[in-house]
Length: 380
Image (cartoon, rainbow, N blue to C red; front, side, top):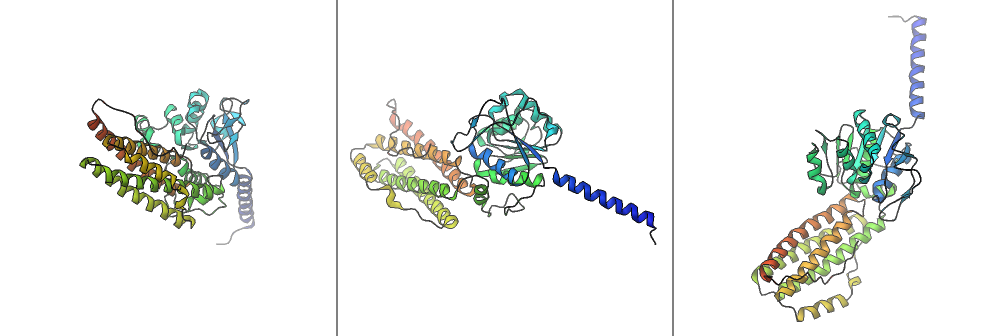
């Protein structure tokens, strides 16, 4: 069928209008607000902030007052607010990032997020940031992930706790800790349809992708920081592996000897996991000699005069040191695969801490004394 000239002109005009709209949308950047308060986890702010900026978004830091500079608890990052949560409105933004939980004490911040949820704005919450959503009554019926320590609070708020690094439920994106932050930032950029210049997988559940590289490009953990953390963990596990072998050789109590042998086997597996990660991801090997002979000499000296209860106290102290060190390591890196190994180690050590504590209480009667670690706290 022939098309007359007026119709062709209409079609041409419509094409020009569509082009103009596309150009306008392209020229108008997405606007994202990041809620901030003092003593934040450095990478939970830094990685989304840099990722959004590199993707062309207009990022606004929202605080509680303008005359304060906020400092990260690791001392790596500081920032000043561009606006406060009091005067802005949810419809000023396309999305929000919530990397802190203590701003939930600010009723204006809570109201802002409640308003944003009602408007189906993109909301990315990580770490304790999900507490703002709890305060805003924004989790009812939602599928989310979060810190294990907040699971009961999350479920009491009416959410379905899924677990795992990142969960996307419509406009709501949630993550647990710094190890997940690059995955969360990538998911937020895709949700907002922002251009991602770095190489990223289309599926945020891709566990084979080197997320640490993406996080590093956005201001997260450097390669050297991850290597150093792995070295620290390997040295600690190797030393305590030898210590627990020595404890088991000297223990006469069968129940104690069995637990100590189990711990030695588990620590051997930990060392293998850590060394494999160090070599496969970073092509490096730890220098075991870095521990030196002095620690072993001290260990053998202590063991010469150790009775059964002293061995229990030393073993319990060493396990507790490992639990807290790996806990801190879990929150200092933005590499999800390395953090997953640290999390597995922490979980194993927590179980053995419980077993040793129960055995110690049953053997010591009314002569309870504090643990006596042979190790020092390596991470804080």
